[in-house]
Picture (tube, rainbow, N blue to C red):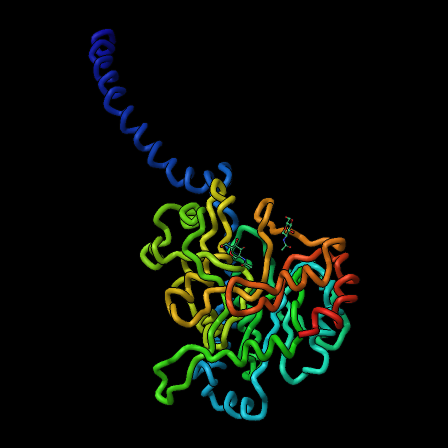
Length: 374
Ligand SMILES: *[C@@H]1O[C@H](CO)[C@@H](O)[C@H](O)[C@H]1NC(C)=O
Ligand SMILES: *[C@@H]1O[C@H](CO)[C@@H](O)[C@H](O)[C@H]1NC(C)=O
């Protein structure tokens, strides 16, 4: 026994020495899947929430329908497009992106009144906002199918694209697409705005008939001081190769697009693939995808097609937390309207933001004598 025991002992020890690293390695190996499964549940995610797959699927179907409905681009060479366009003068689609009551609807109604054949209204509101549309002629029943939206996420881009798609499908006569929010107000009469957009000489094109093409009105800038932080908000290098930093642009969240650019935006998959990525939580302060997606896309795909300025005046003086100055009733005056219309160029601003809900009455008082007087 002793002999055996003595003989066995070293063997037993050898076994311990050679088996232990193997066991440890095996255990480590087996724990890898466990780490992968559990880690995301235990560690806080490093990014903001991404867009739900179901929303993406619905949007793709909608955008495909809009692209098909607009086949032939500007001028809508699709058969139905031609027929309806021949009967109808070009229209402006007013796209309201809001999660709040449209308190300025009475002012917009006065703006629209008498021009029913020249415009359409579309409203996108987060379903959870349970918004009730004003029961007035232009807004009644103008909801489009909507999904949840939140700041610091690409959901605001999706909402704008849904509005563009719905308007493209709804009426081939929609020639311009003006994106607005609940705190936007008109600075001119409808007649003035319509003429300003439709009478623009446009840019030369290489279309066979030499027709000039309508321009889009969107700010496109490469000079934002926070550009680099905004470029890497989704992570280092993730925008490559589609969007090199030198081509990354900043611009206004609210814009007026010509029809061919609305089609370009709803067709896009290449840029969306990048811009839909959620921002890193650690860089959420630089996360404004909706201020970059549209100007970058338009500048890369049709640099001469946009004016590079916006028609919507906004006051960034003393802005806090990415919110511009919000006008209050004591500030509303004929002078303010005239001041806001002014731009650094030959054009006049057509819209302005942001106005607090209490400004409705003072603005209505100025409507006929100042705002619609031009
Ligand atoms: C812009 O906002 C600032 C306050 O943030 C205000 O003092 C100024 O008058 C506003 N400018 C115009 C043109 O309304
Ligand atoms: C005009 O340009 C100046 C200087 O670039 C700028 O501070 C101002 O905000 C601009 N005004 C408008 C209405 O764009």
